[in-house]
Image: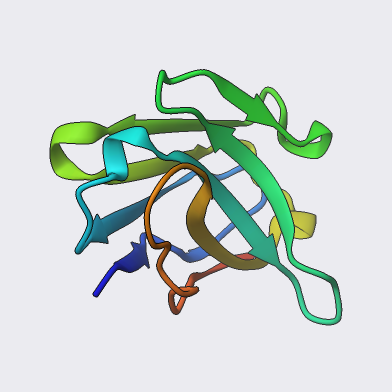
Length: 118
């Protein structure tokens, strides 16, 4: 069974930092997948905020450019999201999932809650 498990969220003050992790298991295709970090705030549709290709090219939604960095460790089948200069509007549940590639994709994981508040 293909699964993703997100972790690393928490409560942080504005201007603070967090590093999220996403561990993928149950697949041989991770190294071929383009991966994405998504977030969903209450009452708002889930949005894609960062992607990383199998070749480690990255792309970001405008509101997080310059503050968030996505990376991957293929040997550990893990994707990271380093989040700096966090703002209250970054408060959401963060999820990861493949955005492109072969094989069966996992269902949405449980996500990890990020709350930015003073």
